[in-house]
Figure 1 (cartoon, rainbow, N blue to C red):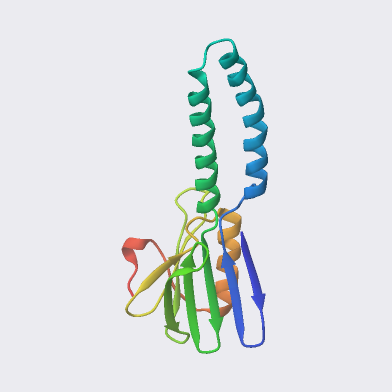
Figure 2 (spheres, rainbow, N blue to C red):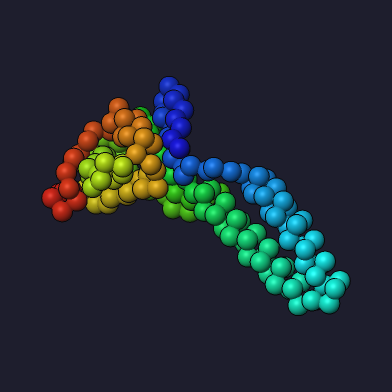
Length: 167
């Protein structure tokens, strides 16, 4: 998902993966599966098959851990701030873990065409010394939206296959 906010002096673009469900809805799914699973396990434990209880608990723990991991991975974001004199790229989950600053005049947008019609183009912002890929987790429509937003603000430095690119 790509969202943008424009003020007089800057453009703020936030790119993040599509999130089909929130952590709260994941907890409801886990609760919905836990009640019958533990009910059946307790029923079997009452008739003497007690070893089923730890396995039911481990199954629910594994499912809860997987749901938490996926929800955490979907919190990843790329925040691109284009101001009058600089371009800033922040990447991270809940706060920026990596940041890059480029001067606006020296920044270019590199677009690598998609290999398959379902994929989106690969995007990278670069200056003379460094290149930073952005939006690699986006679907085709969101990638094209990000391309449109960035092309309005930053010159397209290259539009070719990665092997042919020169910075």
